[in-house]
Length: 162
Image 1 (cartoon, rainbow, N blue to C red):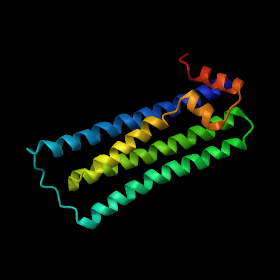
Image 2 (image 1 turned 90 degrees about the vertical axis):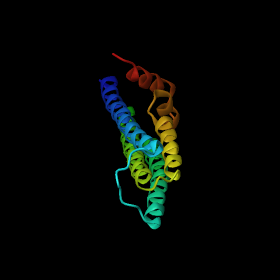
Image 3 (image 1 turned 30 degrees about the vertical axis):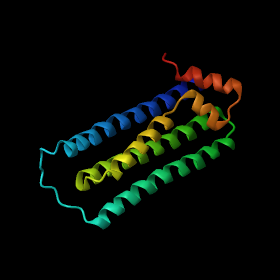
Image 4 (image 1 turned 60 degrees about the vertical axis):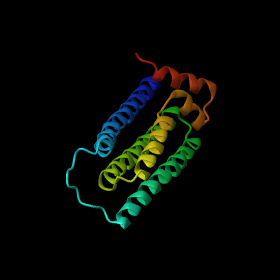
């Protein structure tokens, strides 16, 4: 019963994280290709300089916030005794983290589209690093939640295909 609950929670989190990544990459890729092609002109409005810095600042703040919020939520797992409860907390924190990262990817796409500033490409690259490092895996879950050996094995079993 516990294994099935953990498997269901893990799978839904894994699906969401992959879906958000699959949505973020093509959006930014299309904007990047549009900007580098130089042949298309959509007559988009020019973003004022303060708008550029607002988008850069908000994107950077969200990147920092997602890291801090995630690790603060992970600390809640230390007080939880049940493994299913720990996994729920971890997966909820991961889902929120990926939603933040998806938001940053959309903001950087908009920023690049409107300003052609390479800062947005850099911020997007950092976002992709977080996307790849934050993807849930049994080892990462066990390490961050400081699980005992038998709990680690249960998490590994739950992550395997049925």
